[in-house]
Image (cartoon, rainbow, N blue to C red; front, side, top):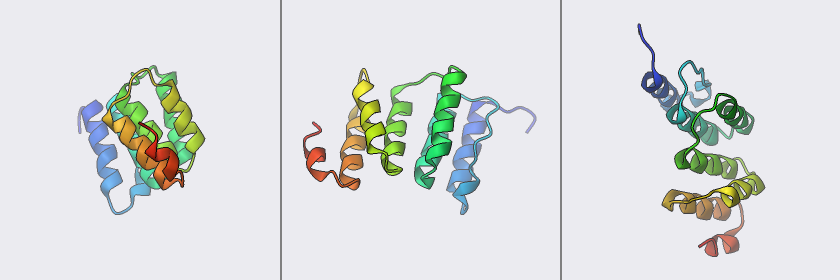
Length: 123
């Protein structure tokens, strides 16, 4: 491919994630943006790769990539799926605004981590 942009990198990351061997989805960022970060964190949550997910978060901050609600929602979901309920709750508590995906991630995340009672009272 003669020219690579954010769209082509995001497509590559998502495509590698959906392959038979999703662990090969190691991100290689040349033109990273919030969309490629969402795809990369989604891969981490499916793999349970918390350390890599935290590296991606650090990369996002270091390179001043826009952090929008979609990225934060995936972040919450990743922490829940990796079993770090405290970190997911901390991120949720610091969010200035939330959408239906945020609330869904919280309810499912709490319930799947053995906090069914708390999940009932999230709203």
